[in-house]
Amino acid sequence: MPRKNPTQARSRARVERILEAAAQVVQEKGYDGATTNAIARRARTSIGSLYQFFPNKAALMHALALRYTDELRGLLGRALVPGVTALPWPQLVERIIDAFAEFHHTRAGFRAVWYGGHVSAELLACAFEAGRDIAASAEPLLVRLAPSLPAKDRALVARVATETVGALLILSVQAESQAHADRVIDEAKKVVVSYLARYAEIPASATKP
Image (cartoon, rainbow, N blue to C red; front, side):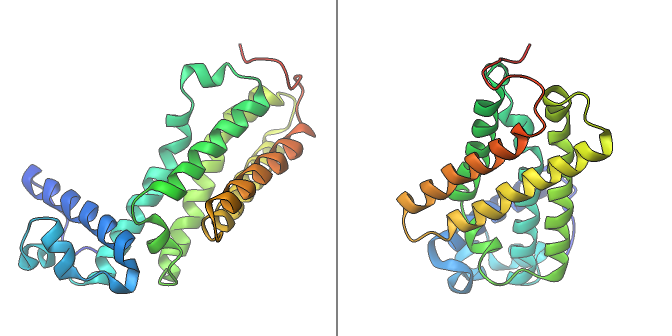
């Protein structure tokens, strides 16, 4: 955990710079190869300044992992730009999956931090909560797709769909090639679209109002 929470704008900016540097270094060198000295150099700050906020590398990586979960929580809302929401629902689902896949594959350090074998039980609990929040943010889409579906069932369907995407995206980032990763993502789209089609009350070709 961070040693202290930054309160001044300058301190917050320094913490953000340290976290961004940590993301870059861990992506380049992996979790084990990343050192606090290398991160401090990349952040253009002293090692003492880094330790003011993060007592060790584990605390720094913990904060970085939490930063990623917060970004994932808001990703669905950012993906639903006006032009996208007017698409037929299967294409809308595919666009959303693309947005999450892009995050998994391009966000600096994400794979090394979350899939590097160093995730604590506390972080796993945070990931579970983030998954619940992402599913909740998807429920309004299901209201439009299947308006007669009871709320309890809607929550379950949203959770199953989002957790399915999450599991298959983990598989995609572990793929041995980009071509294989792309195949996994395509299969994820088929699985989720087929699953939601069981509940859909509007034609697959219809656009949203």
